[in-house]
Length: 364
Image (cartoon, rainbow, N blue to C red; front, side, top):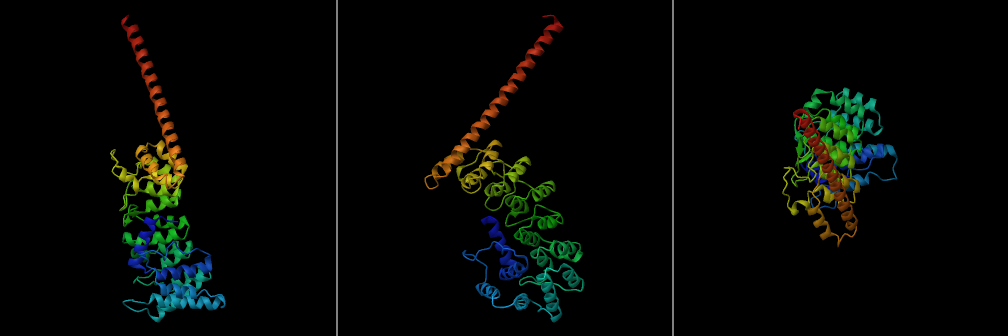
């Protein structure tokens, strides 16, 4: 489940480019054949972009009194009709027939038939997108064979990889499938892995879903670990919030600031911890492993503890988290003390040995 920040960004993508109604419909017919869950969008928020009429129509298509073939025909007709709405140049009959052929093959989960249709010039269109959206259909269908084929086509790469908004749209759809390897296929084609939309980067998304293959791929390609969104939340914050301790460990290893402080400043006001601090959000979500990792990496504990103590009246479970943070801080201090004593011992032995050598050489 994506966080509120990333979900809001996804909504902005759809609001500007897709008009989520068609996504809802597409999710419906993909779900018919693949058993997928619809994307994590809600229709109870103030800035919702879901069209109630489209919702009603798409729900109506799922009636149980009709046979599968009839429902499939209705879905195909509805999607084609919806794709033609508001288009500068209306779809031709040939384009509609190509769409129908593609959708029918997709609903049967027939990759060879989809590929044959594409080779014959069939394309898929969505409302709000003037150019073809066949790649989106393949991603929503979780059809890796078709995705791989389309990504090899120069026209597809030219159409979809020419702007960060389009790339983030593709990656967001891939994220909604719940199959990280589809997202990996797209990332492999991206030249700049630090692209963002509304401040949300691919690394933030990967950190929250916790897929280590994607995270390592992005980091190895130069993804910036401390880039922040408009709320000053970094990839480490999202990983900590979701409890992805392996992602937290990887980000820290690549130099992520343990306080979630993009500018790495030492002076952090308490207000910063309200919305941006990884340790605080890990404590509020009871992610014990993440808490220990962050404290061990040097995260500031005093400001967070002050904040949690203030909040524990309304959230009694924070008492346990406070104790865990304090214990982790003590363990960190004990480790530092041990390291200091060991270093001091080495220095003392070195000084003693050096002095003995000097005495021996000069005959003192």
